[in-house]
Image (tube, rainbow, N blue to C red; front, side, top):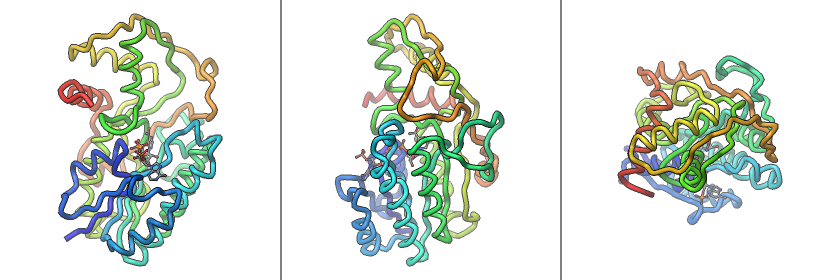
Length: 294
Ligand SMILES: NC(=O)c1ccc[n+]([C@@H]2O[C@H](COP(=O)([O-])OP(=O)(O)OC[C@H]3O[C@@H](n4cnc5c(N)ncnc54)[C@H](OP(=O)(O)O)[C@@H]3O)[C@@H](O)[C@H]2O)c1
């Protein structure tokens, strides 16, 4: 029987994972149990629990704040996963780790393959890339790079921010020149759970895989879709106008890739199905939210 250690169980993906993983085989830990700014505590916990697989859904995800807190981002996104990899290796366990489209610089205009050159343009992206390198020291690793994650649970995200702003305001300005694939946290968690049996039996080659919902959007397109879908579900919104603006008109501390669409054929080949379109994920998430407000 698998012994699963889920790290980061309070995050968007972490909460979806905790709902899906078998409770009798899973130890889920969040920041309140172990603060990853002291990653050595995690080493002790892994030695005690002796998992057969570690799933790391924890990360320092505040992309802009990472510019002024690079040490915290590095500790949580690079040192902690490296310790997970070292301990997994000692136990001959597997390690499933989440990473990001922000390891790329966004200068490409076709979907990024797993083998494409990384070149992060932010401290967050650099810390996540360093985490990938650390994770590779475990023979049985799976790095799932995903992108533009939103979910019903965990901290706020683009969808929930848009719903709030869309009910408070009549006009919004949203960036139109960054392109990616919005991805529902639940779809990421479902894919991980689907992959687990094969991963445990070492039927999936160790390495890096891209996983997102299909289709592409700008943040502007995504905002419009949130309002359309929410209204179709009966949400009362005050928003009248969404104005497309450029990244240059909305300066942020961290640079973001202009284009970070990920090619996901490799993982969907293993899953043996097609990815859900981002708009379908959005509709499902909003339906869920409207039935069970968080
Ligand atoms: N969000 C995105 O748009 C996005 C895009 C691409 C890739 N990803 C990657 O996907 C993965 C999951 O992302 P997500 O959106 O689910 O992230 P999230 O909602 O921000 O969750 C991250 C979790 O990490 C935990 N964490 C942060 N600092 C910690 C610390 N010092 N000690 C212990 N736990 C700590 C957080 O704890 P608290 O709940 O206590 O804060 C949170 O539960 C991450 O690897 C992320 O890099 C995310």
